[in-house]
Length: 289
Image 1 (cartoon, rainbow, N blue to C red):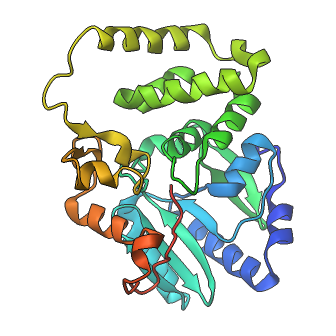
Image 2: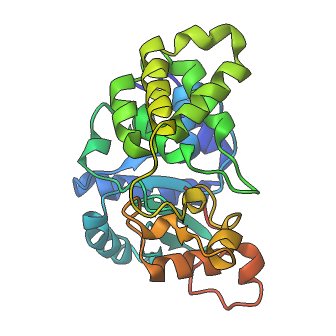
């Protein structure tokens, strides 16, 4: 059971009408037996005790369950918008909305069956729910390195509060070929908390450093002219792919994104969206999961 009382914090942060919308939406999904996980600020509070205000409710769902969820939402009189088909939909009730997240903005972390193991139980607005597990919370935040948003502090706090309970073999496996990003965050953890470096198992550091050493001794197979920076920031590496001729890392086997997805996601960057008409329900600055 989650040690942080999420429901009171949510009641305090949103007005009664918004709380009623959230409560009804959660109950509808529970009654329909559609699997979902609560994420975002509520999951972070559950694992770290850090409570901060939020403007919406983040629910992780499987993409194959979206149509059922959309039908249920519409039956309740709510508006549904597939805002970004590669990762995010929204359910609206007036000005209030719920994010339905089935992938990450970079297409790296689709929600699959692995997400629904080892989840904590929590009570949100009186509804019993499951919380996104710790390892997937780390994974989904690790690649958010935008100019206006960097989730590195969240990563450090998640590790600091849970180092002994993290499934380290599972976490290393989940990062797979993107292990350098994990190593970067673990290195920063040792800088942020110098007196707690020992809490990360030594075998994890040794394993990742051995991979790093091995890679420095051999050339990269295939075409090395790839910029994977676009997997970390949708904006800050556009110069590389648009002007310098690098292959966009999102259009390789690393990601599930298509050229159309990249174009749509790029067009929604605030600086580029100013002169472009927004699609119905699309936000100028959506969450950067």
